[in-house]
Amino acid sequence: MDKISVIVSCYNEEESLPLFYQEMERVRKKDFEGIDFEYIFVNDGSRDNTLKEMKELRQKDKKVRYISFSRNFGKEAAMLAGLEASTGDYVTLMDADLQDPPALLRQMYDYIKKDKFDCVGTRRVNRKGEPPIRSFFARIFYKIINKMSKIEMVDGARDYRLMTKQMVDAIISMKEYNRYSKGLFSFVGFNTKWIEYENVERVAGETKWSFWKLFKYAIEGITAFSTTPLIIASVIGILFCLVAFLLILVIIIKTLIYGDPTSGWPSMICVIFFVSGVQLFSLGIIGQYLSKTYLEVKHRPIYIIKETEKGEIDNTDKSQSENQYN
Ligand code: UDP
Ligand code: MG
Image 1 (cartoon, protein in one colour):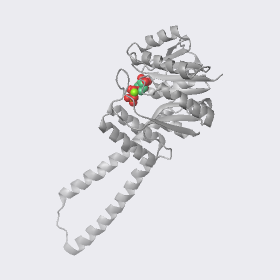
Image 2: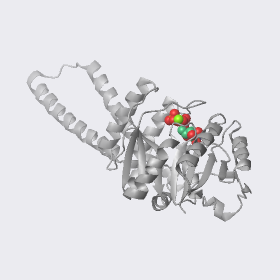
Image 3: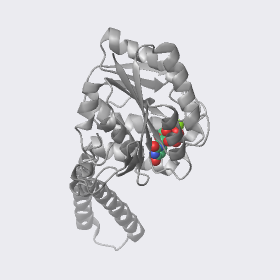
Image 4: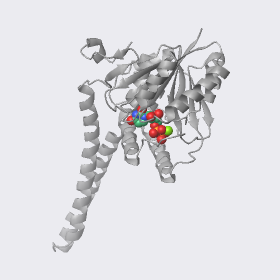
């Protein structure tokens, strides 16, 4: 019998979580007869009663498992913890706010079973209900990152996807600290089928992504999957050297012909400002990569578990520091 693991990362989702469970159970009973299920709810350091909700669901339903972090580690860490704990033949990642409709799951499952895809991803065709300025920047981001990176990032792709165990193992094998899932999914390859759906607004609570958080996430994506910015910095450097060389020639010739009247200070200052701006910008780019490398070499755990449905986790246990939970 096939088993599907449903992984849901939750940060302050006390209102959405019960609604999610209800809807997912409805779909499971309707569309997935004879298929085993397991829910893995990951509590990403919520400050509200999310953990309590999870425990209540666990009381009612033994299919429910949960992992509770010691603090907020971010959605990427929560998804990794869920993937590592999953035991299903097929694994799906979903948001707790029902923006990833469980009703699509059967169709996704069929694509994997009948058409032998390794993964079925979802993308939203519109961004209804989102601030227009956010959609605008999202679009620009996808244009830029796809130019810069060999890895294809699909605009509008969500983290909602159903994968085979084989693909999940490939993703888990990538232990990098700076995780950018959209890139990781595409990096591991495998046959992916994309299905499209209209954007759904969240059922309850509010989005955890501020514009600033999204901006940092975008930079993360670019530095994690492309080194093109470093090349851009070098190219700008070379261009500036060429321009400087030409200007020197012009000045020498001008001085020989017209003498040397001291003039042009304001323009000189402008040039100095411009060039030092470019230098600082390039230094910033290098700094970005350096800081990522710095975090990577420290080999800190990506998340720390405080407790699971099996009880409190003993963090002195050596295997725990390797992010192993099973
Ligand atoms: N989430 C999380 N950790 C965080 C932020 C968000 O686990 O630090 C979860 C959140 O509970 C939700 C999912 O990630 O299930 C998507 O978050 P949200 O709905 O706020 O993002 P949006 O849909 O607005 O992009
Ligand atoms: Mg959402």
